[in-house]
Length: 332
Image 1 (cartoon, rainbow, N blue to C red):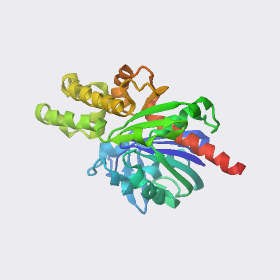
Image 2 (tube, rainbow, N blue to C red):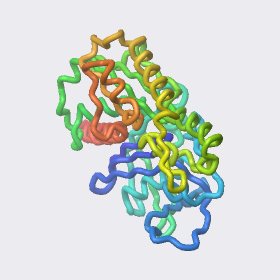
Image 3 (cartoon, one colour):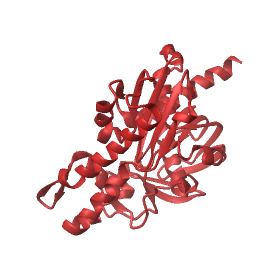
Image 4 (tube, one colour):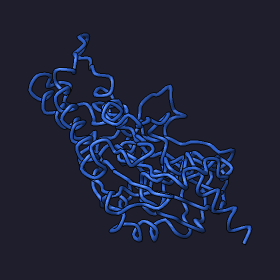
């Protein structure tokens, strides 16, 4: 089974498995709390493994009494991260035994230091149980860890069968702005090889805006400061929030910091790629932060394009690369 996995700080996105399914889980896991009544019991995902027992995703955000949203390099070594991975596997397949060819990624800023750690953590056999189902045994036969930002390049280069459909990319210089919750990646590619001198990662993404919003709410709308970070992120994207029956326009609150971070993203890209990024045929904008700053990047670079469903670009590209590599290994 071929899997592309993108364990983001906001959402865990995974593609592959039975019938090329998708799994999207908000990246939050915590010990489960009992719910007295629910009409959405089928949406509750509790995973048990050697890592512990964790409620994950939307229901964890709603119900967990404890738990902290993770936003650091060490997250990949936490039981919460692995429980989200197991939950994703259970969304993609109900098979009790399965072998996996896995491609996953790390932020550009963390890739060199953490790729072997992540590979070792994922390689091999994993046993877990999604409550209400039979136990599952997943053997990760092969793990490839690539820098985030390569996903959209691979998604454009390959189709779902792993075949090359855009061979011209092998002759072009392409730039990627991958805007995540914690990290922003700036990837430069020439002929399908990255350019280290023009590639970097920074650590001020969409969660920074949420922190500004929370500071405001704690003063002006204290009742709303109880909302979890994922809910505040939704409010940032929507540009509004409800305080009881009153709608609060957030534009005056977050507009300034959105402009500041957007300008920082553009300035960083220009620092490494030139004012117009003129040597690059295209500038690909992806990641969930594209909903906040994609248009800002497009205004700065006329060749910029925001991918459809930009938050899924890495997972889709990783999956197509996994399929491509599986076919290559069979042909040897």
